[in-house]
Amino acid sequence: MNILADKLKKTIISLPEVKEILDGVDIEAMDQIQRWTYDYVTKFTKIEPKKAKVMKEKLVQECSLTEMEASEIVNTMPGSIEELRAFTFGWKKLILTDVLEKMLKIIKENA
Image (cartoon, rainbow, N blue to C red):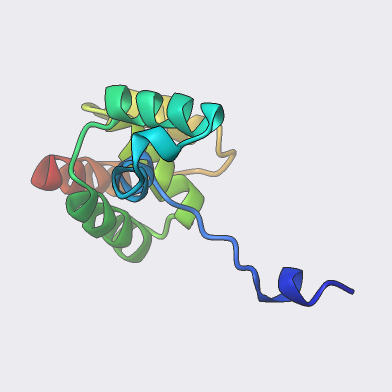
């Protein structure tokens, strides 16, 4: 049994949170995968990390989403009920229109 593996914890984070972490690393010290990741999150991050954390928290608490689902919403920032339905359809659970409207309101408040 690996003692270090027992102490590691997996955490689901959004793209803005990844960017925040990588912003603290010297680009010259990054390996190739880290640079590719940094390039990707720099291009596709749509909001600031603090706003992303708040939004993810609200989506989990107020809309009963999982951390993974909330992170997916933060990463994509859908702008309409139809776009939200496209994402939530893949989750294979029914999300009522009033919950989708609440999700959209949270997105717009934090965009």
